[in-house]
Image (cartoon, rainbow, N blue to C red; front, top):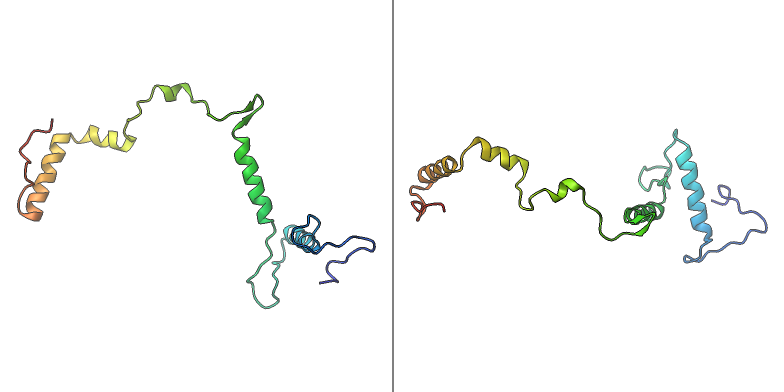
Amino acid sequence: MKHLYPINQGEEVYNRAGHRHNIYEKQAQELREIARNDPNYFYTYSADYLSLSVEPYNPDDIKRHEEQLKKSLFRTPEGFQTILKKDKSEYNKHPKKPHESKIDELNTVPYHEEKTEQQTKLFYDRGAPIKGSNKKDF
């Protein structure tokens, strides 16, 4: 590995995991750069197997970028915004409005016909209608 990642003379080497200038993280980042810029080869840690492939992007950097993107949705040039503003069309919607598919279903098949159809299915499937089926709906 020393021939792949030469360390310059006079360069400070840090091998502790929590240090910002960790030499192993620096070498891994250089290897990711090589793998990212070379589309002709697939880099792995094994010469015989394709497992343990080298990720061309650092997963920590991707998570950090996603967090920044998520936070930027709540920040505006005026400052931090906790409540997102609604469109004017959202104020005119009823809060209990059913889904569009349910509206289409209600427009095509009337409720009372659908109920009688379900009762006949239950009668032929189980032998008798449900108790209290002769009560009015409303």
